[in-house]
View: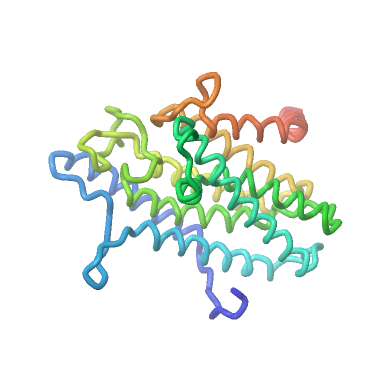
Length: 284
């Protein structure tokens, strides 16, 4: 369906990322200096007398722009996977992400499992679960349609762009979105809506995403095994989420680790052979 949309021109993406990053950093510093003023979180807009969260706008925009970036990049490569199989793979990714994002998210607060309702399950979602479920969905679909070629490398930049835009929406929600951090005296601490200076986890992640974008732009012409870029992306992103989880007010699931921690550990084990190989290559 997105093929019929007007052509979306992707121009100087790196400059857009860096400009937005600097703007958000400046915004964070200003919020720290102006902490005596009341918080403006969550950000909302008024339409026909009703107030709506900007989060929903950015969430939708993230999906649309991410898909357009994917099609833009796909035009510039000789894809060994047919268009039909790509559509099946994307379908598997979306269905897997739909399920995985809800399951991991609901396990972030295990105490609600006793009173879990379908509405609670549907409204809960997390990127980590989406990526994990999407991975399973893709691998399952590829087995069904008989595709044995690694298919993830082309999705890295679209995913990074979509995540970055989506995190702007998460940031606009303040403490109304469970992506905020614990209280801190760190210079980037912000009042996200409850009068306390907290780690702006969303901003940290956006900075990290900019770093990942620059990294993968820098190695796009390197001769790597097909699929290694996506594996590297998954390992680095889940490593970040594993570490950043410790400065969030998380709910332990098992052994004092949250569902995000355990999802990251699973990814590390899943890509264990890749980690061993890439480590040997790096230090040899």
